[in-house]
Length: 259
Image 1 (cartoon, rainbow, N blue to C red):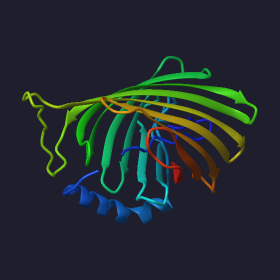
Image 2: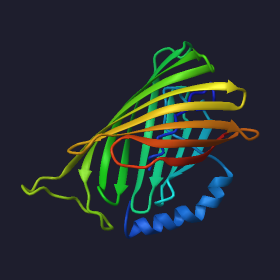
Image 3: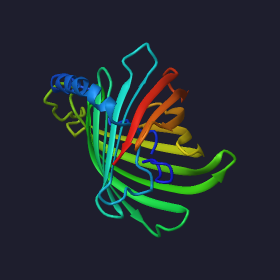
Image 4: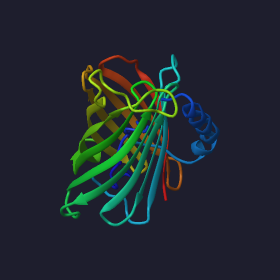
């Protein structure tokens, strides 16, 4: 979620969001909707700033290096109450699709520079590393002054635990050699620093780190600018580069829409 002072979480992490069978159908649906979605919005993650009751935010983004199909992400959230926010985080590449439904509650005072929120959710990932998982997370953020202008800092740790699924459709549970359910676990950490250079122009830097159980740590740095293009729509342009782990520098394009 990117903070209200400028419009709203990062660049998320759309990582909502890889399959076969139904996965192909989902990809086809996503491609058919892409032109319509591009006319609207784009985004990221949920930060500690709750969405106002009855208000919504939608973000669509695509990140790619030109040597692969890249990653297309859709993020949306809706303010249920002054403290409760409902979010949907989805993403898709050539062979993988993920979807995560999140509920988040802001805690503590909401009238100071610092904010805190806790979240939980359930998700499904298909394709290589298929899994059904549960998520628990927290988000801390603070408004602050920067040399570039008024800004904010957000720190968002997240833990996911689930059960492994087969890659075919419909997916089935995977068993370890001893006959027990194969489980999955991963930890994520997003740190975002942003500033408003002038009305209608925001710049952000974000570190996105992830550690899979029995896997190598991965981290990427994203630098982006978000510019108002009239009304409540914004255009996002950025570069994403690996800090640790495999990957290439990629261009990120997206749109944001609030209503």
